[in-house]
Image (cartoon, rainbow, N blue to C red; front, side):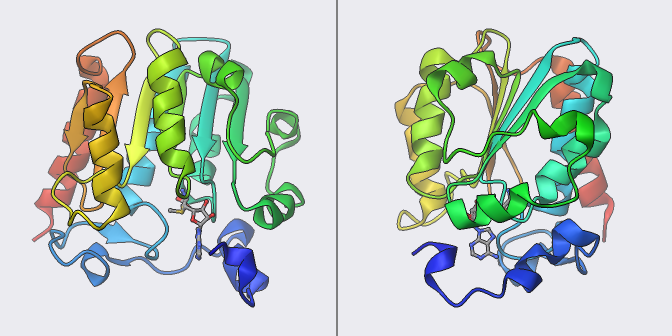
Length: 233
Ligand SMILES: C[S@@+](CC[C@H](N)C(=O)[O-])C[C@H]1O[C@@H](n2cnc3c(N)ncnc32)[C@H](O)[C@@H]1O
């Protein structure tokens, strides 16, 4: 069921876009095995530390180029998007291309005053990327609804740009087999993608095209994230 099949409270759904992200909660409220250091806003948003990690990845990677393209699917309530937009230097960006498969939702996101003028023309309002768009992206973040995330993972595997980074959210190999998390991870294994399985409660996978694992400086950012999480007692 898409969100727009039900009687949606759009005002509530869009509050995070309007300067009200809401309180953070222990991720344990949604993922029973999560260490108490992991936090989240709700069951749909990425973990707080994962959203922050992706923003630092974006900052680090975009600093090395003047034509940086980020492609993010499943933008939803935008917890990841907002952090990326505020982490990067606008003069370095060719595009932050966001995709939302729920078209009513994406139409509403488009109207938001949130988007800085210099980014407005960079935003795509399609369900899922085309292979041509995928080929141009330096950082690819996949958090879309079924079946798009797995199709997008396959697309990156086939046409992703050399050196580009891929992050797939909800990819726990330890999740029950009935969960989408498991099938996302299974798909990655079936494609033979090599990379890092991250230890966030919902599961994440980070890969770099053309290497068996992401560059050390990106792995270091993740190690720092884990240190902060586990410092919490
Ligand atoms: C896991 S959510 C994406 C969350 C997004 N990356 C973020 O950090 O805010 C994936 C998809 O689920 C749907 N979705 C997001 N929030 C939802 C909600 N509160 N209720 C129902 N569906 C939701 C949207 O279609 C969204 O693209």
